[in-house]
Every structure is written in structure tokens, then in C-alpha cells.
Length: 517
Ligand code: XMP
Image (tube, rainbow, N blue to C red; front, side, top):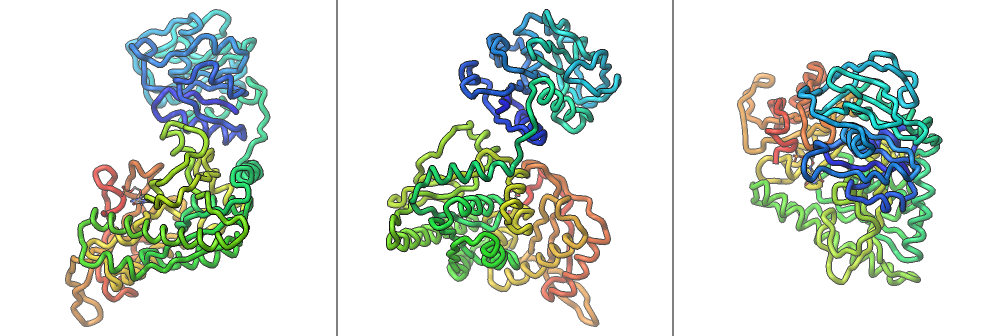
């Protein structure tokens, strides 16, 4: 693989994704990995990422000069560039001139990494220190006002670096620079793609589970669906999927899983109808955290019971022990939790909750090397229905946290109807992939006066909460076309009798969260 050494900040994941977009497989490693650790992974190339430190701050992540003696091509970016310069005897100093954001650089020599670059270009910078003198043997390729050495290379040793961030889209020729490094600098071929993952994972899954039985909790979301489809392809006969219908789903979702997903993948599916149970447990409760806890608790119990049943049924088949639980863990989760390898033996997992002691599962996590967009590509390749592959995020507690107030059967019906209209119109307007998600919220304890036909109404408001986001950590309200909003509003007030007002939430996150509860 190409190893991306993570010096902190959020750049490493972006770099790893860009490398994969260049069809070269990449993995992220922490900067605490020793040179021996890095070389043990047999890297085709190494990229040192940006980071928040100054190279001479105490405790700044250190780059062992031995890394540059190993004969592996290395690209240093921002902090990684400065660390490389310093380790090899160049000088890094404060310029007193912070460069931040779009910055003009002059390219004096294209060399290998800047091949094809115009002499003047705008790149994305974010730094206080700068490289003042390149180490011996390096050619200076570019300069900017605040960076006497903004890019350099030593092609003989296959060492390259740049002060700016080629991984961000604001560096218009950034991807080209990365590809120059990968293809020309490191001599790599663009022969990796998410489709390759399928064959590889199928092999791995077979090797891991042998002839044991496997269970998978389906949520209807992208990750669990694609994970299940992969395991199905590998050991279909041994897999049972469990889908808990808690009654808090949106219109059509149960059918999407029960019919479309099963038809496309052939999985053996156990649908548990727990609608009454959840309604009963939620009755009388209005506090958001209490509602969330109740839903979480009931979910675990229902899943536990279903898992037990699957275990018992499997016991009747030959070799019927259930030992494995499929999880749709993605690469960002793996990186953020320290990047550990291998499957942990678990008793509980946050996605499923505490499983009973007598059910000890090992995890099968076939997506743990993939980013979300790659999971979608794999899903499409496996024939998972597009409606699932492109599904927007939907919270586990479902509509239960989108009814402000007590959750009742009638209120769920009202919200489901309004939500279905909003989703239909967003899809019709082609906005599904532009909007991160659009919660539709019922203010069940609020009523307002309206007029419809000749009569006074006293109904409930529906809130539309369209948001734009990269990762749900922060979000902005989406500036949606007025005519689409108008259509949604007209249809909801016409078609859902209990609703006489539709309002738009124009709050960013922070201070608002995406969901209302
Ligand atoms: P908030 O409301 O915290 O939501 O801004 C951030 C993102 O997380 C989703 N969300 C959940 N997803 N279980 C989930 O699987 C949950 O309990 C849950 N609560 C919120 C929310 O839809 C948004 O995408």
C-alpha cells in the first residue's frame, strides 16, 4: 500500500481518499509508527501528512531521517514537507508571515511532481513556519511570498515535498500533483479500485468464518446492507440477517429491505415485527433522552431474542454454531479509534448494544478498509438497490426522535405521510445527492390556527430541516429552491389533514443539532 503518515489534524483521511481516487490503494498509519513498523508494511510509497504542529515546538512529531534512506518514495505535505526538510538538513524558520487559504505560487521548475503545472497557480496553504533552504541534493520547484521554498524534490532519491495541500479541492492542480508523485515519482500503476475489494474480501470472509454460522443486523442503511451483501456473496448459506421493525421507520423502508434487498441479494432474512412493543414502551414519555434510551434498550432486547432464535435454529443444521456477527464498520471509524487490526472478540458493541453473555460473537467487518463513497461503489457492484446505496443518513431511533412530544401510532402516521411527501419532492427535484439529509419533524404538542376551505383549522406544524454537511459534525441549512419548498408545503397541508403549517429550520450546526431531539 501507499502509507499516509498521520501527523494530526484532519488531512490524512483526505489524502488517503485522494490516493484511492487515483486508483492506488492507501492506508493511514499514526506518526508514532517507527520506520521499522512502516517498512514492515512493505509500502510502495509514503506520504507524510500535514499537521497542526511547528517542527520545533517541544513534543512535535518527529520524522526519523532513516525513513529517507529506505529507498521508498516519499512525499511530504505541509508539516510533512517541513519535517522532511529539517530531517535532511534544510532550514525551517518562522517567516512572520502566515499563509492561509488560497495562495499564489510561482513554479520555477516543474520537475516530477509539478509536471504539467502552469508557472502561476493558486494553491491552498495553511502554515506559519516555512522552509528557507532546501536540503542538499534537492531542487527548488516553487516559491510563494511566504515560502522561499514552497516545493522541492530529489528525484534520484525519490523524495518530494510541497508546502501546500494538494489533497484539498481548493488546490486546483492538487490531484495532478498527487498523481505525478504516485505514477511518475513512485512508478505506481493505477490498478486498484473498490471492485477489487470484493474478491479480496470474499476470500477473507471465507477464511475467517470457515463453516460457522453468521448473523447480521440490518438497519436498512448503506453500511449494514453492503456488509451483508458481501458476506452473502462469500458464505451465503451460513448467513442470517435480522431486521427489527420498531415501527419508527419511514414509509416504504420495511418493504425496501424485505423485498428489494432480499430480491437483489438473496439473503435469508428474519424480520421481527416489534411495532407494538416499542409503542407500548414509549407510551407517556416526552423527554428526548428518555425516549432515546427506551428505544435503544428495546432494540437490544429484540435483537437479542432474535439472535437466540437464530442460534437455536442454526443448532439444528449441521455445523450450526453461530460465532460471527457482521458489522458495517468503515475505515474512518477504524482510524479514529486508533487503527487497530484484526477482529476483536466482543460481548457488546455500540451498534448492537450489549449482547447476552451466552452469545459470544467474533466480528466480521468486511468494510473496515473502505471510505463511504467506496462502500457505495462496492454496493452498486454487488447489485444492492440504488435506493439503499444512496440512502441519506437516518438515525437508529428513527421517527421516534422526530416527533417532539409523546410517540403515538396516530402521530407516527401523520409524520410518515408528511415525510413521504417531502422525500418524494426532493427526489423529483433531483436534490437527493445535494442535500446531506432532510429530517421532517412533527411538533406534536404545538397547534396553530389556520384556514382551509371555508373553515378554521387548529393543526400541527411540520418542520423541514434540510442540511448540507460533509460528515454531520457540522452542518449548514440548505438554501433550497423556493419552488420545491412551496410544492412540499402545499402538498403536505393539502394531503395530511392534521397539518396546517409547514416551517423551515434555518439554523446551522452548531448551535442547532441536525435532529431536533
Ligand atoms: P445530530 O442531531 O447529533 O445528528 O446533529 C448527527 C447525525 O447523526 C444522526 N443521528 C443518529 N444516527 N443513531 C444513529 O444511527 C442515533 O441515535 C442518531 N442520532 C442522530 C443524524 O441523523 C445526523 O445524520
